[in-house]
Image 1 (cartoon, rainbow, N blue to C red):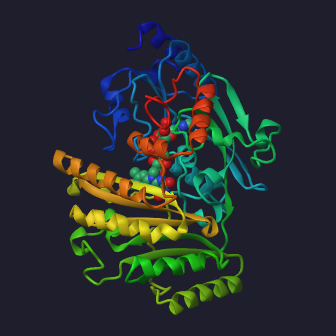
Image 2 (cartoon, rainbow, N blue to C red):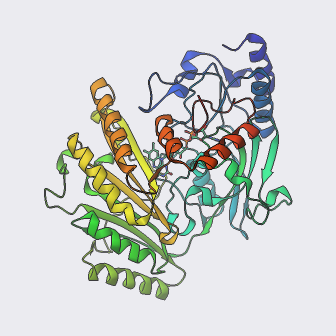
Image 3 (cartoon, rainbow, N blue to C red):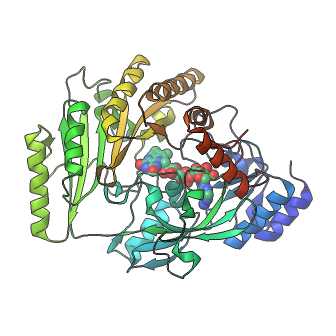
Length: 475
Ligand SMILES: Cc1cc2nc3c(=O)[nH]c(=O)nc-3n(C[C@H](O)[C@H](O)[C@H](O)COP(=O)(O)OP(=O)(O)OC[C@H]3O[C@@H](n4cnc5c(N)ncnc54)[C@H](O)[C@@H]3O)c2cc1C
């Protein structure tokens, strides 16, 4: 419980209208996918409008040892922004401005609560020659948490994971101090993290347990005039993956390579799931589907790149849908097409995913497929090849009826079983991990590294107020 004196202090910072202890206001912030029971519960939700206000709020939390949970949309699937220990949820969505777009160095300086819809809309209107890498998540999800949590964007082949899109940060530490990281620490230009010690890592992969990022510079890329997205298919995921890895290394202007299996299409709202076989391999239908996006500066360059993609695919038995009249797996993110929000199917959706070596994409799929079929669920697989083929991400989705406790229990068990089996794949490391998965990280991590992480967390957040009960932090 937070006493009235503190509530009055918080109201003094942001105004009465932006502080609430009412259950109907707090409902949204307690939401948990299915990671743990009971779901979280906060005492207060507050919506600051400036970095200084964030700082004042954190100082109050620090002085009174009240948990502080940074929050943008709370739908990161690992339920990482669900308040596990009560306290104050800091809803950052008023911090949704684009402060600057630097066309020379190609970055957007944004505030910590901006959503993909805000950023994309701003760029389309004001800088149509530049594009952000965008996730396939719903438009109202946060740009900054996506970067901090190693999100995957539709420019993953050229930009890497969301963490690599960050040029620099401004953040409020758990102690209440405000720091600047990257070139912005010495200059008004936020062009990069070079050449000082790279402290951005103090906030990347920490699930909000070290501080609140109030500003971030996000890399943008040129929007080139010639574009094509190919859809390729073959019978088996095992056969398709090596061809995608070949394409990734062929330097063909490829901006994104996403692989899904046929079952994955059941995750998308507009497809009738009854028309998709549960196990495409058994039904002898093409189980491997890839989306390969390429771009070029001139028409000639574009044709040459497209021809090379077509040749490689043909030689290795990947059938490409015709360029004219073909379908795109996903058109123009951010989008709202996900079956997990489809209430006629029960409205439940959850996933589990790992970063891993590109050697293990097919291994991951085979593990996940076997377990999904054991539970009589269609395997729904997705993999993105990142940063020119240097690494990849692999994950499995599952739909279920969230009004049926047995289905929820089954979905939980299924996902945990995949996680356990995937532990046998060396280097497959779960990201956006719920608390229970961190326990396996703790068991496996090189001991001195684990201790160093804990020491750093304590240094940045001496009173353990930042998002307690999440991430690596102790209970
Ligand atoms: C249907 C669906 C599809 C998706 N597809 C993709 C996809 O293709 N690629 C992808 O990358 N993601 C995908 N996601 C995940 C989605 O993008 C995440 O929700 C996003 O990564 C985090 O945004 P959020 O607003 O939900 O963050 P939140 O849940 O609000 O926060 C996530 C974590 O970051 C912390 N945090 C939030 N803001 C800050 C801040 N300013 N400073 C410090 N810590 C902060 C929180 O405390 C929490 O620990 C998908 C999600 C859904 C529901």
